[in-house]
Length: 531
Image (cartoon, rainbow, N blue to C red):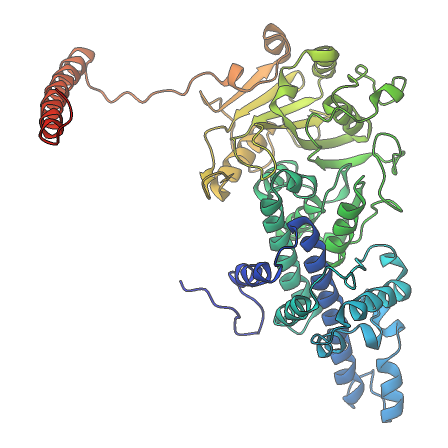
């Protein structure tokens, strides 16, 4: 089916994001991708809040002009006053946008050499009028090294994003564009991209497995907020109320923290990401939080996390993490914040499943003996833009015998998904919808959840192992050690007949090889090469 830019109601269709990206990328000139990211995403956010404001204003115009409406206003001057009453907007969770900061005003000045200052002033005005946005919006568009002609072209380009007449339609279209740009920037930035973006197929796998319908959702290293966005999508897709989950997060990178705030605001997602960015280990912004669901993609194998200053920390119940690697500091921080019936799903490097360096093996052993490890999933390679390090998914829970589920005390499910996924280009792989469904479905069947079906071990893919079996493997959690080799289907051909047939085929191939060798040598000799 041919892609279209807009559908019948004026909103952007799939394919529009890619066209927008390709055009925007041409405008950046020599600007570094990491720097250009904030330029573009800041403008997309500005377009969103302006469109949402205008959408609410259009509704007020209709309602105050309709004599049958309860909002009807008889005089034009009174109607004008209502249209510029900030309470009419903020009461509906719409950001108040001053006249000089509205998109129409900015686009009218896009060709002016002062457009950079115009945008910076608009960002300042918006932050002053909306305290929740204070310190979040980028305000460096007036800098001399930013080509103002290209900036004007970028403004005109973003101005072509057409949204429908409701706030939710604006959130959908601009939210999709924002998310698409985040993904493309992560790909363009390579190694640095992993600091703010987790590929969507991993996020979806985590979310589909732990199913955050309602409760407190926590991410201690939230990046651009993708885990939260997917949790909201999951709740809505499964008939839940998006407001039935509460979002808590923390991020140490200031620019990434701002990206997340904008990403969630553009989707109307309320959250508590702390009053500012902060180091999760040294300045926990949610010290008393007990999360029902934890989703995380901690930075892998970081060695400069300041562990030597936290030797006596109360979070290290299962052992002091090595100062040279924060992997098990993240694991224990997540456990510390887990509610009695909570469940956590997070990404770690494969080394976490087997490493004994710096006491990691003893920490892992203690966590296994405490019966906290619910499921381990080995993932295929090439999933990340930022690293080729193979990764795994950990799932932890404090209660393996929750009401309505099969009791799995003393057991852990192992899933080997390394053969799954499809290459989307030469270096990147993605899990398909069917892959995610198979992994999540296997986990839910194992847990014995309603309508999940019956679980069975499948050689080469999944295995339910008891704690005693894990102990025999030295408390190593690598799924490949447990699931065994995949069963080879018997084709029914007797062994002797198969060997006779294969030997005959091999003999024919040897003869053909000899013939081809003679032909090649003859041709080379005629060309003056060879003896």
